[in-house]
Image (tube, rainbow over all chains, first blue to last red; front, side, top):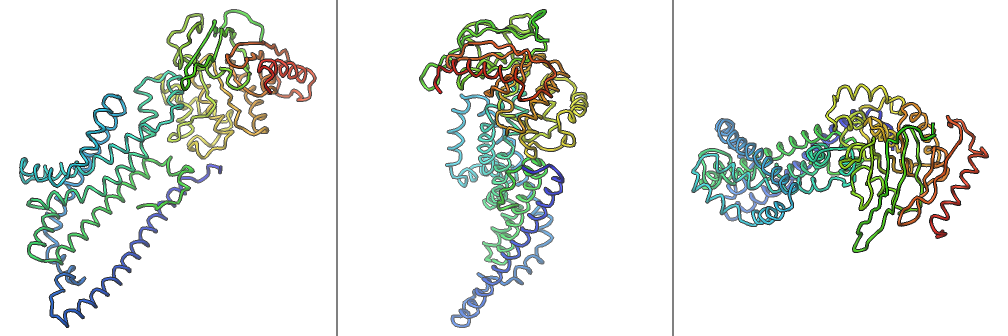
Length: 286
Length: 262
């Protein structure tokens, strides 16, 4: 094992490498997509020349998507994106609180574990599509039901991962704390909760990727504002350039959220990322 | 100092303990009695599975004995949790805490001032060979440093009696010898009562005022060896005849205790 010199710098350097890797991967993805798109474009021109089909609407050019962005930028930035972002963040926050609470309850009592665990699993077998429609029928068109849909999408990974994290605490460590005279509450706050944090963040990361999709999904059913509505209107008016724009924005929003979770995790779990565990060269920031 | 005087600060009276392990009944301890006087260094040695760690679990209150009682500071201790300092075989440092925040765990659990505990811990870091590592995470430390950090955590609990369960068991011979010398220095400075489990005959004799030899399961005390070597012992020759004689005596007792199974 090495000495402990200059570890904080190594951590920040690692963060930098991750950012660099993210940029490179994105660049590669763009190049591959561009290559693919140009091929499709060639094909489209070919087919159109032969059969005179309006394939341009199905495979809109990059400039068409950019045109859609120019045309709708103000409404997107002022109405749709803030609405979706609000629903996403509020839903994710509530899902986190709910998930951690469920995990804590299951950790506290064996009876609650027996009661909650099946409910938890069953909640994931019900098609959220059906529940979403029901919710919107009951609660109307506001952002409330969409937030609920996001919560339904997101609480499960948080609850399950946090629970397994709480259960993973080293039993010998818990014994030591009890021998040192720690109360049950102290054992929880000083050992079990911190031990569960890496798992919690793993769950939160999954939830973050689900959350934007959840919000869009809720809005798609019915809403007045949001990227989901924008997407739906684009499809119904057969404006696929706008639809592609909405898809790109959704993906960007999801990616930003995951990056945010990773950043918070790096800062909160400095011990985890400076330890030997971090010598595992994983997929980094993704 | 090893002469029993005054009242013992820990008395183990007729402790027996049986537990079930996979459907089998294991008799871990049988009628174990001894007393530890203030400032005494007692080592406990015995074959594997002779209930030494079980004894520690009983003293710390992690387990209840089937028979017998533990007397701490002259009073029968029913609620024993937190009344003695305990260091298990693994250092069990909290990986999410820096060294400094790890070693103040005892005062923190007692609800004492953390700032005061940190100040005292900082003063002691050099003595425990952890100077400059206050803000390092445990994963960055070597095995010997981790054990010293765990020992500092145990000392900072400010308990009169410290139970150390094979603290140097996993270390290489050189580091182990170095830490034994160092531990004697620390012990002489703090004047704690130490119960120290070991598997190593040399270690048992070198450190102790008294050595308790446990038999194979069920664990009983089969021999008590008084080590009357002069202190301080940090400079004692490893080839000292007295040391060798005591080690030989202990080895014979230990062989008898394990029933000639080796």
